[in-house]
Image (cartoon, rainbow, N blue to C red; front, side):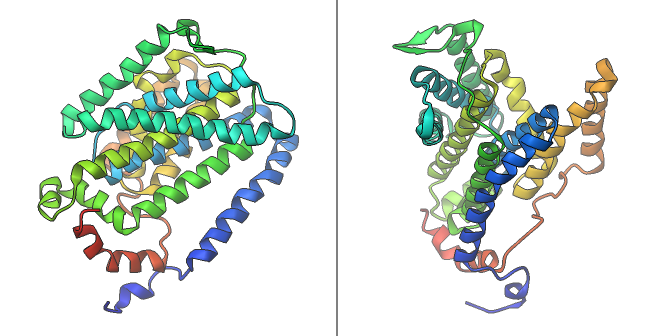
Length: 342
């Protein structure tokens, strides 16, 4: 491996150091949660938690749309599956006491896995499609999920609520859970994106035909991106269900998927840190424009149009705010691994 100038750029951080920092960061959310509950206005705390949930949703969609180069309009459907799976199970079992936090973690994982299975079932028959055809197929998937929700009152002993929604879900999600989930999601997508497999995802985005000619199983990587993205969307849905306590089917229509696509495009397709910033801005900004009442969405839409006219590549384009030296090294040595297909 050639030791060129690229090795000297960025931070030199060993893997164990990054892992320790992530553990400390997640653990630090716990006392910070207590401080925010005591000191922060309830409205602003809610906005802050919604920022964390949208970071999970936008980052997971970025793996599909930005990094792998697909065009999915069904991310709200995966969120709905995770939300209803976790919310229904939480309402049925109603865990309390010392085991409530562990039960919440288990049910969030279950909700994510159910959404991941849905991503697999959708991905296998549809991800041989490309471009607009894939967008239409995923949009149809989202509408199928919505229709199933509004026409299903319960599945066995588990309540769904049909068109009236699912209510009285035990509230468990807090600032800690929202941002612990966001940290895990961002760290996981980052590591995957800048690994040897990440190069395969990016190869599919840049030129799918050329990637297939080099021996990369493009369908495998497209389905894998969908499954991983769906899992984190399902976790975000579960967090939303156990934070709000009520689920309305209308919250998961295609407009939610469009909102997430806007976050990915505005942040810069393929840029993880850019999408995180865009998710925070596009969650906070509409709330701050509420004093304009009926003009709020007009101003918000004009701001997006101006952004796309002045900087169509997004806030950061394909760049990141931070890069580590070991990432550059992985990129250098990963080319042969990518050409092997998996």
